[in-house]
Amino acid sequence: MKSLPKSKRDEVDVSNEFFPATPRKEFSIGLIRIVTAMVIFMAGGVLGLSVSSTFTRYYPLHTDVFFPETRYISNSNRDCSGIRNFVKPAQVNHNMNDQQLFWRGSMVPTIKDYPFRRVPKVAFMFMTRGSIPLQPLWDKFFDGHEKYFSVYVHTAPGYKLNVSKTSAFYRQEIPSQVVEWGSITLVDAEKRLLANALLDFNNERFVLLSESCIPIFNFPKVYNYLINSKQSYVQSYDEDTPRGRGRYSRHMYPEVRPFQWRKGSEWFELNRKLAVTMVSESKYYHVFKKYCRPSCYPDEHYIPTYLNMFNGSLNSNRTVTWVDWSREGPHPAMFGNEDVTEDFINSIRNNGTICTYNNRPTSVCYLFARKFAPSALRPLLNMSSKLMKY
Image (cartoon, rainbow, N blue to C red; front, side, top):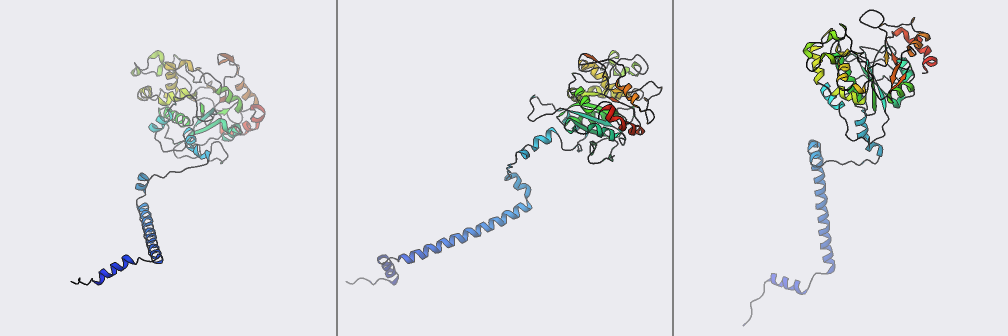
């Protein structure tokens, strides 16, 4: 019996089985597959880049969150830019309000060793309503000692000093507020200056000055005197007169008792520890703000009283700013062009007063003097090199 004939398809399969494809045919098929895979891969890559570009363009914040960018900076100086800006802000201007500023300025590291090379500086803090007429004299005093001082100016809000870029006062106006003579706003301005100066961790001593103050010694002598001092210089004394104890309000009791009440010059000098203390203090500030009203003058009583109560051993109870109260009136004497002579300046520098410096008697009790009128600038400049050595 004959078998049924096979279909043509079966014949083809049989022929393939017994007659396999040649090597050239296999190579062509493999090449086609490789080329096809490469085309698909490249098309996918182009599509992926296109989508990524669009996503980044319209949703940049999302990419930052989920795919944060890491930058590696090889320059070691740039690696330290963060700590440098923290320990010394690049500029005195900022957008902090007083509450934020005082909080920031009151920060004290608990680690004693500094992670940077610290050069102690003196912060010269000027409180003025406008210009500083004696600025050329101060620039002469500061010249060549840039590493050892800082300048801060509290003036009328929005006021800009008209000084050259080479001046130590250039762009040193801090964010300020209106100040009224004889009110608590003077204390606010003092705290504002202190807090701004405390942002620079290199500042170790803090001197409050007015636009009518002058230095009566050269910079090295002033710097060494303050940096090496074991005490601060805030005038604080008990005066049994209407201008002393007479300004005490019974409403301050019991926070401030009559025997603790003190008076002193507004123009103080503080070390860093006491500067932080005064910026941080709020309890007694509010007592003075509420009860030390006009005719009380909180700028003459708040800091002297507070230091007497809590930090008496750190204070010398004297000021380093000379002033003449011999003339009658609410303000000290003002000296102009005709008053300024070498004999007059020498009488301030060596006025016969004996005080204590680091537990030893000294005749150098004053480093600054006031009040000097704008007309005094020329004679002061003429004698500064010979007499005051700057």
